[in-house]
Structures are given as structure tokens and as C-alpha cells.
Amino acid sequence: MSVLQRFEKRLEGLVEGAFAKVFKGVVHPVEILNAMQREAEAHKAILVGGRTLVPNRYVIDLSPYDHSRLAPYAAALAQELAQSQAEFIGEQAWTVYGDVIVEIERGDGLDTGMFRVSAEVYTADQAPQATYEAPPAYPSYQQGGGGAPHGGGAPGTRNVRLVSGDGRTFPLAIGSTTIGRGDQANLRLPDVGISRRHARLDFDGAQVVLTDLGSTNGTMVNGQRVSAVALNPGDMIQIGTTTLTFRVDG
Image (cartoon, rainbow, N blue to C red; front, top):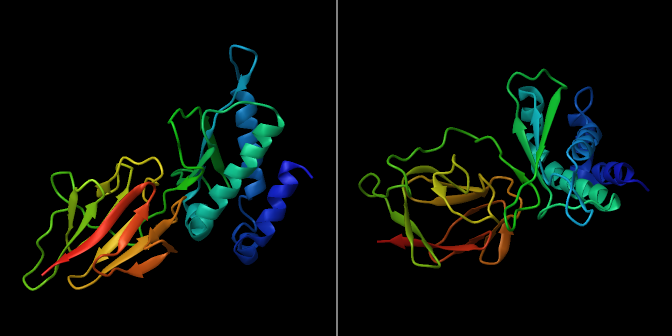
């Protein structure tokens, strides 16, 4: 069975066949994988010793319409594309630096059914296998001045904070705080196991809800993988190799 056939087989069972409905009449994942394979072929470089180096990072730009339809399934699709591309590269006996990374993004200006693939050699020591930068569900809280979000909400609200394993403290303000390693994150953490927009904390003055944003490596609370959960004092949040303890003052 070829890489493409295995990919199609896995897609059939992915999110209970939702892909068949999402992609009917528009761009199909197999077309994307074909384009990724062509990009790898087009960017081959011969290394000393005769090995062939190909790109390991692939950015897929989808039309705004396709991107919005795909959003609930994009993290799973990115993972499958990364796995299938890695299988294809292995079958060709080509070389990559690190893991294969797939990122699915919104490509403004692209018509429905159109997509664009760009490829590059990504040389981070250890990168997540596939990442997806999901659009925010609603406008997120924007802090001022850089650094961690500032605490101190309205009178009567709880003072809540995250404490990292090395003792750094990150107060949380009322509103939404995005955790990630990308420029758009409110709370940026330099951890390659963390997606660019990994998780979101929503604080209403009384309760903090942690939501995973379709991250590659997932979000753990007290050792259990979560999609969304209300936090309790003392909860241990694990994202990438970073541990954050949820603390409440007063």
C-alpha cells in the first residue's frame, strides 16, 4: 500500500468521516499531500557523503473559506499530513533535520478550493511534529507593555497566577490570556514542545477555564490530557516540557 493510500485510509476514520463532508467540492487532503511531495522533490539538496536533504517544515495556506471550514479538524489533519510526509521521505531514503512539521494557515487572497504549499529546512534542535495555529474563538485580552499579563482586576475579584517550575510568576488578568511560543501569544514560553498558540486561559473574576487550542502535543492537567477544564488551586498544568502551577491568593 502506497503512502497516499495509507493516508486516505487513515482519513476515512478520522473524526468519524467528517473530512468527506468538509472537503466535498473543495480542496482535498490528498491534493495537499501530493503538493508537499512535489515540494520535497523540488527542494532536494545533496549533502557531503551523498545523502539527499529535503525540507521538513511545510506551511499550507488555505483560502479563508476553506480554512474556516477546516478549523475543527486542522490539528488532526496536520498530524496526519506530517506522518504521511515523513513516511514518503523515508521511502525515498532522503534526510531531514529533526521532525516533519506541518502548519495550516489562512491564505488571504486565495479563492475557495485553492491552496499554496511552501517548504523549508527547519533546523531547531527538537520541533513538534505538526502544529496548527487556530483562529481565536473571540477577541483575546491584549496586555500592555510586553511580558506576562498584569494581575489586579476589579475589586472583589480573586488574584490568580501561574507559577513555573523555576519560580517565575505570571499573574492573570480578567479576560483571555493565550499561552504559546509565537508572537501572538500573551504569555510566551520558549519551549519547542509548545505550539505557537497552544492554550487559552479565560478568567471572569471568579473562575479560570483552561482550553487547549488544538495544540500538537496536547495540554495536561494533573497528568490528564484535557480539552477544556475549570482550574482549581494547586492544579499542575503541563504543556511541552513546561510545568505551571495554578495559584489563587486570598
